[in-house]
Length: 459
Ligand code: 5AD
Ligand code: SF4
Image 1: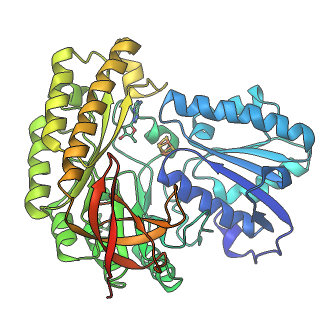
Image 2: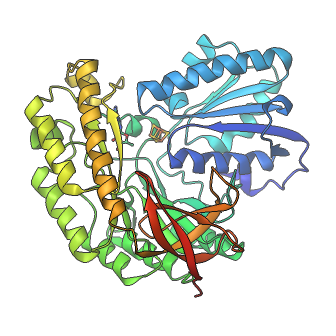
């Protein structure tokens, strides 16, 4: 399978690919790999589904509502296909992996089903469809990292780009479907990652985000299975490309984030002081049931360590409310640890049982929807209060911001992010995206800082 890309010269673009992506950043990065594979077969991407010869929906299985959304979208695409019967429709990604043939059986309009490790096979699958058959490849791999495929940057702002550094996950959190949909963890060769980052910088990109389900377990081993290259070393190598190339990464795991990573962030100004540090629950019994392999005290100790080494570190987290058997007191433990964390941002969810996961097999999903909802509201309210306090404390301070483009509300305003990953809005004046500017913060909202440029920052 690996030969498909390597030996195929790009055919001149004659057909149109429309690709729609749901879920995490990893899925966005995967769609860019798929677009690259399709380009070798003469497909160029289009934003207009009406003119598409092939429509791909890259899907997410993380929660039930993510899947429901995709099913709804497929029903809409069904109508589209009525006006364009020759259009090939494919389902990619985590739902494809999870539901496999169900797509071909349930939805007549679907021609192709491809799991996250089988994208190199897409050209062959398309040929199979053109020969009048349905086509599917959902084989998971222990090696595939798409290392040498240069992604086609889709809807990129030309300033920041994702680089996938590893695939899969070996953690087996009991609530999570990812190990089943994305398979075993494997790391991509550092040379290809550094080359991709260097090429992005040469093209004018100013920020790369290194992506993995659990970046702290990124590793290269020698033949004796000894670790010879770590995530901290990778971070350092990418940071050394240029001082004006910002380096970000996501996600970390509280059990794995090393001091070596923290000190590497501290050492390099261009490695952003921002860590996504998912807590999930603040109660030890629930964390145990979630199979997170850390407890409340460990989470707190590592959080304290992050703040000790990088005092101004932006920290965000993930929370799940109403996990199986969670009591009111245990929810209170989540609230108190969540408050202690004073997170800059949080992704907060109600527990959604996923078929086949450890939790679905072992535990009853026994917390009523309204209780899950009420607990979620309490967490969200607390986050709003903490965000406002935190953001307000930034008024009067200056932040170095990388300009990413126009703000959503006004073309006279620019949008960018500071080192801590907070959104900053300010009048763009004569500055351009891709420039670094120092912004004085004058006002804030729950999600952003608002101010004006005081000077350009040169490297
Ligand atoms: N239900 C709710 N949230 C989930 N997440 C993962 N699986 C589930 C689930 N079954 C959340 C976790 C994870 C984030 C990516 O999604 O908080 O960190
Ligand atoms: Fe990404 Fe997980 Fe959703 Fe798959 S299930 S798209 S890995 S968030």
